[in-house]
Length: 323
Image (cartoon, rainbow, N blue to C red; front, side, top):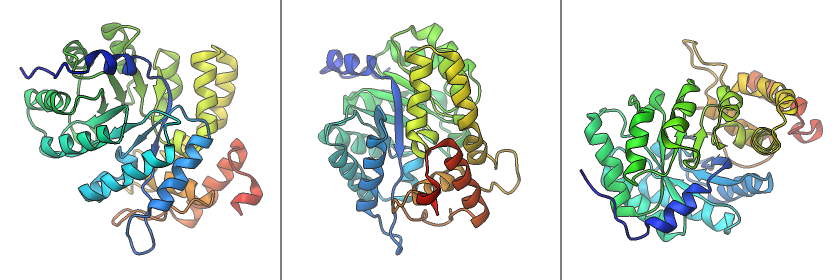
């Protein structure tokens, strides 16, 4: 078993134990020629922080690291950190199949002053579980920052169980988990195993209400990017004010946006893609994020109109601003 480096365990664990709230992913902006637009990245970060989010989680799946070179990922993170200017904590996505690349990105995040890293399971080749767990151990040992395990089996093909989360937590390898899973049982199973001080985040908008109601400390997903003020308000109602009736009323206002975001689930076409919807929401606000690098394309005019209407109804967009 690979043991973690204990050089900063006390400080890092204390920081991770306070993790809670709405952490927004960030969109990587692209110019018309397909190059990374760092000005657009900064504008989007400014919008999220001004919207009241509690933290940022750049370069997870929404940041499209798969479409970026390693150097571009570093440039994007530098822009995010510079724009955030210490106003909110940052758990940087360090996403790659290769452990050495994850370590390189993690060390870069540490050099920028990020509070932690968000690490996805190795994808595509689906290594044996022992190798996957050792991947996290090596990253923790060599990077030293707190790790949020980003568990998204629908994208990686690898399922980390609550029992394995508990194992890695006991070893001081991981310090929080983002459950991008439609089964809310993952949240309360983790809470039972890891106790009340281990930060648990929900990562699927469809079950965000249920997840926070049963004990998730925070929320990292599409709605925190699309409608940050509404996401923050819902989290406060459920986790701080404990006002279930008001939270339920707000949830049903947010739900049409979520249903549009996930409209493609269970369809053969896969259209619209959830990330294209998130990017379009930014574009409707005048934030120059541009379309993704191909093959992912922008939403259709019909989806754009539906999204505009849903955001106006939610109060996240004025009719004049969206015209």
